[in-house]
Amino acid sequence: MKNAIIVYDSVYGNTEKVARALAEGLEKSGTVKVTLSRPDATDAGRLAEYDILLIGAPTHAWKASESIRKFLAKLSESSIKGKRVFAFDTKMKGRFAGSGASKDIQDSLSKLGADVVRERVSAIVKGKEGPLEEGAESNFTSIGLEIAKIIQ
Ligand SMILES: Cc1cc2nc3c(=O)[nH]c(=O)nc-3n(C[C@H](O)[C@H](O)[C@H](O)COP(=O)(O)O)c2cc1C
Image (cartoon, rainbow, N blue to C red; front, side):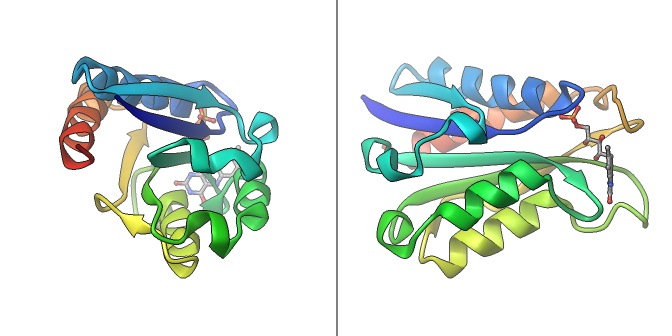
């Protein structure tokens, strides 16, 4: 059995829905046990217990939300080098949305030498408070299953 931790932030609940959909896909494989955790409650010193670290954030002013940025700042090369990772976010549609928080997350993790198992993904929200676009959750459940296979 592999151990996964999904560290996510969510103000209006949309990123939480996506994180739970991702967890569902990972666990559907029958080979991955998932821990869902908020950044403030996550001990950055205990990431060695997990085979994969998945981080998701809402996009705030073109970046990851503050609590996720604070969490990323706590990570060190010694805990992240070679660690399997995946980054995701929620953001709005259109040219003002920017690249999304997951770019921030994936770039920070890559700089620390992480092994990005799958290119980052954004889920689109229709407005600031949501809802998510149709199909976003089922897409993340599929991605969870896909990642479960990759890390075996
Ligand atoms: C302070 C603030 C800044 C935001 N800035 C952006 C932005 O730069 N680009 C974007 O696409 N969405 C932006 N949004 C919309 C968020 O992407 C949206 O609220 C979020 O994806 C919803 O996720 P949540 O329900 O998990 O909080 C912003 C929202 C807030 C509250």
